[in-house]
Image (cartoon, one colour):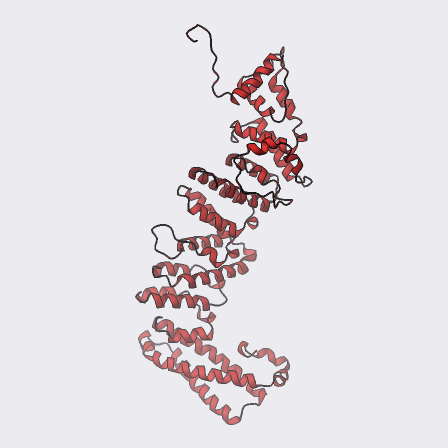
Length: 500
């Protein structure tokens, strides 16, 4: 009541403000009659609920009229649906609270997208130019200019806030909408909204999108886009640890699709590493946890090859500690690699750069090597490398001799059929061979490590002789006429790999 004694009624938070109040007033002063259109039905419904305008039997009910108007929502055009959806958002109808009109509009919008017979309604979308101008939250990012049958609707829904996007995507998933298309839209939405969003809004958008991606089929995710999202998420200070963990899991599940460039991510602040090592540890562990047994070996070897390339890249980092490097080289099981040459290369580089580490740390790092999976060249380099522990060098020497012994046996088998080597040369080479093999057997006798270290210089000298002899064998094998080899017939299958 004011000073003149007149009563005043104040409506707080009236839906639609003055516009909504005017629509209600027209309804009341027009004997319960008003024009209800797709552009006004949402506002009229919300205002009628606010005013509790239920029917008392004598007057027409505005609520009933709006509900009856919604019964024909399936006949609305695409642009009319978008206008109604924007009204729901402007009136702050919360997706988390029950709302009949919001649910109906969302169901119809998603139903149009899911239906396989619905084509791109560009003509209907352009009918309502006022709606196109009012969606000022859209950025300059445009998908319509290069639209396709699956992405024609992307730009039309970019005006929605993240809470409505969350509900729309979950409805799509429930109705078995194509997951690959949903993924593309979410990445498109993230890039578009980040142009004008505040830091707090960016964190909220990123968290919702990451949670929605975790609901989708892993095969629909793009490794490149996931890494792009990781870089954006890393720049946000207040994003939750849970979302970071979920994103690591998503990237790890697609790690076999990655390239070395994806893994070369700068480290977090106050870290002196060349790259983020902890990220790779998390991703590889996530990959192994998500690995499908049916296709595990092929995918595992792809990741092993990727990890070996990464190890070669980071092994020269002077800030890389022995414990961290050991964790990286021991990350995958032995079965993941067909060859350990690249792994040996990375370890060799690391030991060259970090010469001051202790023997125990060297032994732990070298425990990742499988000598049987090292090539002859790698074994030769290992036997001569003073940076490796003596025990490792001796083991490499022994394995090299074992491979050469197999080569000699294969050479003798071929000499029986070729006749291209003279008897005198054969006798002389057999003597050399026997001498080398006797030496190898002598080395294989169990002795103490100190004694083996004393014998190491002599072994390295023998490695040089073995290399020369191996080259002679390869030369003689190459001189054998192909007709001689073909005359072996079925016996050719007994040839060792080096001779085949």
